[in-house]
Length: 248
Image 1 (cartoon, rainbow, N blue to C red):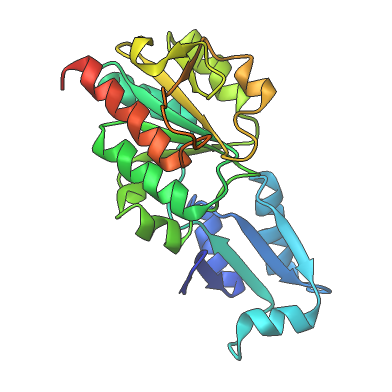
Image 2 (image 1 turned 180 degrees about the vertical axis):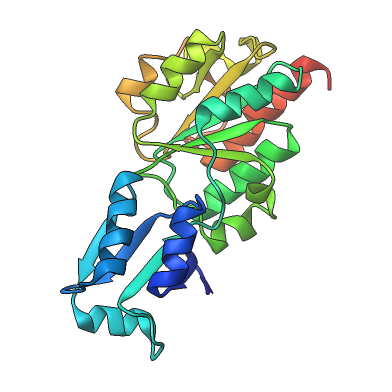
C-alpha cells in the first residue's frame, strides 16, 4: 500500500520476503508481545541488516492496520531506493564527465527539496546527498515537487555528512559551500572539476562541522535589501553557474 510517506507492507510473510530479497526498508513495526518462530526469524534478519525495529501497543497496530489482518507486523519502505554514496561516485565517474554532487545540510522543507532535485537533474548533476536525520523526508510530496526528478537522480542518505565529504575529497572533488558569508563570488569559484555543492538551511545555514571541510566558501552577489534567497533558488543559481562554466 502507498501513502504520503512511502510504501507499507503488511503481514509477516510479505515483510520477511521483502527483507530477504534485499528491499530497502526504513523500519518495521511489531505489536508488543508478538511471539513465534516466524517472528523470531524475521527479527533476527532485521537485526542482522540493522533495520530499525519498533514495538508498539496493540491499539497503534490497529490504527496502522485500519481493519486489515496484518499479523501484528508492518514494514515501511521508502518512496525511492537510496544509493550508497560510494556507488553514486563510481557511477558518476563511469559517465566520463567531471561529476557534480549537491549536498543538503538541514534543508527541511519537502518543497525546497523537490525544487532543488528538479534543478539538479535539469543541470545534469549526478547525485544528491542528504542527512538521515534533520532533513526533509522524501515522500510523495517531495517527488511531486521535483516533477519526478527524485526518481531519476541518485539520492544518498548518510548518518553523518562529514563521512561522504572526506571520501569525496579523497576522490579529488572540490567541496564548494554556497554561503552568504563566502569570501568569493560564486562566479569566481572554479566549478569545472569534480564538485560537491553544499547548501544549508535558510535559517541556520551550513553547519560549522560541514563548513570546515569545504574548500571554497562562495556567495551569490546580491544588490537588494533582502538578506537571502530561498535555498532552492540559490541552489539553481549555483548549479547552472556550473553548467555555464562547463560550456554545456
